[in-house]
Image 1 (spheres, rainbow, N blue to C red):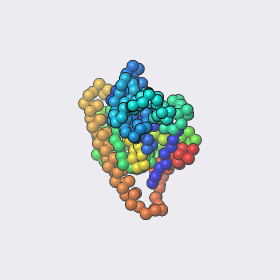
Image 2 (image 1 turned 90 degrees about the vertical axis):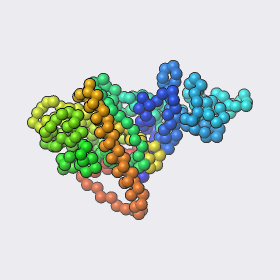
Image 3 (image 1 turned 60 degrees about the horizontal axis):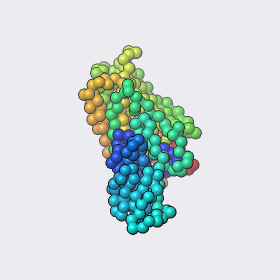
Image 4 (image 1 turned 45 degrees about the vertical axis):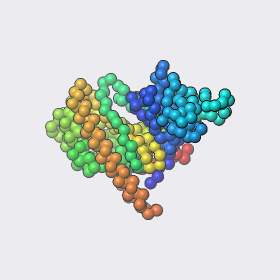
Length: 336
């Protein structure tokens, strides 16, 4: 499996909290990029992370004000990527510039446009408003995975694996047993998958964070906005009770780094026990363990697929409807 990259798209490059006056290096769709903030207005700058002279990484260099000074020979670039100084001569070569990427900060994420800069339209960025909403408390992280990014999309759109891979954390028998409904707007690039469990075990993830001791009604409603943003709207309440309803918004940004490599940005936002630091730390640690189970499994899966003979056949069933729709959308975006 090799999922083609779709260009002329917005991708999450970082959390806003990761970008500062210290350089942050990320590779997105095979393009090395360095991120930093300007001194005055704290604007995020994204430049190609290679000096035009001898390809030295600018992320291993230094700042002079808002200009990047290459740490090898001193070539200096302004925030637009234009070279403003070269050593040993007054004339600056016309081609001495590095690419500058459009960026936007939306809902606590730093988004970068990979493609033709003149086509970048911030209104196309899918929203996750809970990430920055004051009524939510969010824990988050990022894990790189050595797998095709389409495998992570598959993983997140088919949550039946929770029963087996995440047993004892978020998985219960009902997740795998409950049928799903799937809607795909392939023109808009959106896939929705719903699984509503009306009488289910309460997994430790929710039992320990909410205090519910009995069985629960558990609603999972997924929205995937290709190619990058995944939202899981989770609602639980005690069986037979209309209230309280515990709302959890689970966010993933799925950013291809290079062929066979993907950045897995994850976040859990909640609107309950928002002042309880113990609950916050529990959810941070617990969800990190869940994410790492996926990381290990997807690394194993990629290695297995790499040894498969050409032309091997997959078997797909009803629970794969969301993942298959996402594959078609990603292929269409890449082709366009």
